[in-house]
Amino acid sequence: MAILNLFFSLLFIFHTASFEVEEDLSIDPVITAISTNSSGELAKYFESSISLNVNGQQGSYSRNQAEIVIRDFFKKNPSKGFTIVYSSETNPSLSSFIGDYLSGEGTFKVFIKVSQQDSNLKIYSLEFVKG
Image (tube, rainbow, N blue to C red; front, side):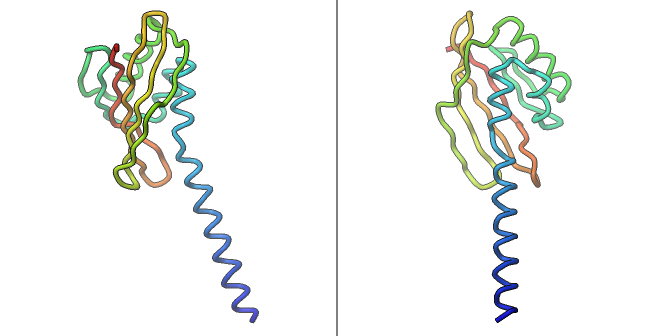
């Protein structure tokens, strides 16, 4: 009986720990970074190389280069709000999100593609397209 109790106790502990990891992989910090125009916070979630399209300026950038491009975009188009309108998970490690970014210059569709590596969420593709 004691072994059975130990087994269920360990099962509960490991099951609870797995839920805690999933909560850490939330897209919420990315949403907050975009909403608050924090290119530095957003760049924390970039892959070392990221595919970036900012209103027609597109290419593959290093994390640091992409942060500069995003910082410039945020400076020219300060946020008046950002919301996710669609999300898709093609498999457990890849997800896509579409959002609406509102600024004084208009509305931009935002396309975010992320991968989950170990316990980290990484953006490998990001697009801001004026709509």
